Figure 1 (tube, rainbow, N blue to C red):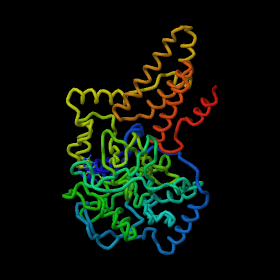
Figure 2: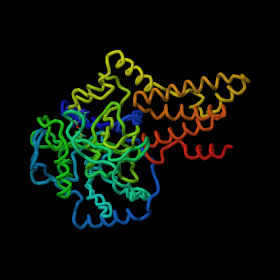
Figure 3: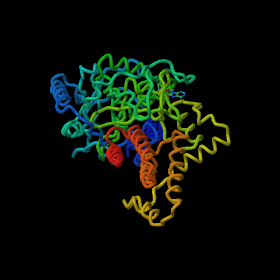
Figure 4: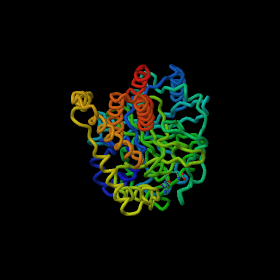
Length: 475
Ligand SMILES: C[S@@+](CC[C@H](N)C(=O)[O-])C[C@H]1O[C@@H](n2cnc3c(N)ncnc32)[C@H](O)[C@@H]1O
């Protein structure tokens, strides 16, 4: 999911509420392609190094406690209040929890039972006293929390995180009218981790609608979740920004939609979105210096530096796919985040340069590696270059020039596309090695490694560590 997806879908849903009742929508980001660009979570196979058992034990303890103190949704057959989601709910009415929804044709991810009803649970996530983190709450379709729990090492903890010290602070943004923002308290390099954080409230990007006296209420589950938060969690929730204070929806929905970050679960599961105390404070730029990734196994987001960041710089991420034109970006930002206009460096370019920037981004977006690469025959190009027996090695030089151009284009636009990084970095490394340029090959590997970590999260790289060891071994 991209930031904004919730809002956008919701607006659409609102307009076609009646239709939605018959055929509820799933908001999703099926292409997954833009994940390399914005604050878009990618399906993560990030396993990292986990302290086996530590979190798991903590989690089991919480689950057991949960059964006693009943943080699991209470079954209710009635839904007497709230309609349409347009009410402001600073003091929400008495909680109504439900584990039954009306029939949901086509909404298979909610495990509809033989009576045509779907079940949901609200699960309290582990307290990690050592990290001083309050429990978070999450709404799961029936069976999903059990499925996640049964994954080996879920939720895991990267021990390096225990040694991680804060390199950020939250204060007034340097962007006019942007409210609060996150700032670096240390210098950072590309690929450095800025913060790791757990969601304190999460739900599927699309929840079933509940019937109310005047129609449906898409906020039903959000309210139920909110009610399960501890007091400090509720305070954090209300402290977050609402970009639509004057409606059309409730403050609760406004806060969620303004701040929700994407969370991909297992393939086939509904896409989730959640709130973080600090990461939700990060403002948008179309030339961001940071990127958010989600790790299912660690049940947490990480923010990575995409550019060298100096102490005191504001951290920015992109809420939207960056390969869009300025006009398209401005539309999405205005409609979904009330950012109007975006005054980031690329949106402020003079017309001619702005047009060029749009073209560059389109080009990056449309990049497709050649068939021989897709067919996993990556050496064919170099073999051909070697066969030509050209003493000037013109073909190799052309390859280096072309791939360097692509890497520079991304750097120039601050628009990183993982397929471009992967293909052109690999090509450059091989061409440099063929030319005897070991140090240039090594430099390319280091850059690709850092960028891929920033774009995809831990453990998602294309084996750059192994390549780097191999090059180091070449004398
Ligand atoms: C996720 S919140 C970011 C944190 C927020 N600034 C705060 O004070 O908590 C998103 C909201 O911040 C504001 N914002 C973020 N980036 C902005 C930008 N580049 N220009 C103006 N406002 C921005 C918008 O109101 C947007 O809806």
